[in-house]
Length: 225
Image (cartoon, rainbow, N blue to C red; front, side):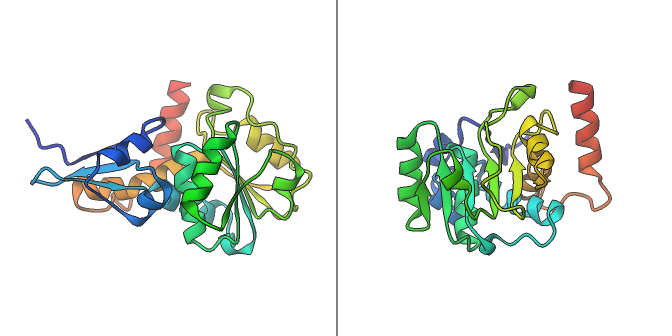
């Protein structure tokens, strides 16, 4: 059989994946979660977190001019995906990362790991005040169900709203954000962007430049819907 060079890890196993590893990159260590494990010939396992860079790449593409340093970011959720996003935003210069989670203790544990730039907020106007970015990093809205209940009215009109859910592509969360006049970024773009480092790790080269991954993914999602 062939040699397994690595694996991608999805929710809810990203924190467990990091625990399996012998080494970890800065983002995986800071976030406490890994979504990419690579296996060396000597049997050692290296952990990486590409969720955060994938999110930032999606923001750069779909919300041109977005700068994490321009204001606080609000992250809904405290699981593996939220951890990667929050850590990346801290490292990218966000002045504050506000964590909103159903289980406050889990959000507090993440805030403690991230340091002084992270804080736990209750869902509501205070979390949105002055926000530069609002991200749904929960699974709410997956499969077309209701997303987080947010009316966005307390956030600045300039706030960018992102949903990590990509099925459906246009979630109720994004629809509400768009109706409120906010720019939106979808989860499919993040999925594609976070996969690029995995492809490079598995195949030793970047994806083909002429491959329209988004078109292929949309075709698959349409067929699978």
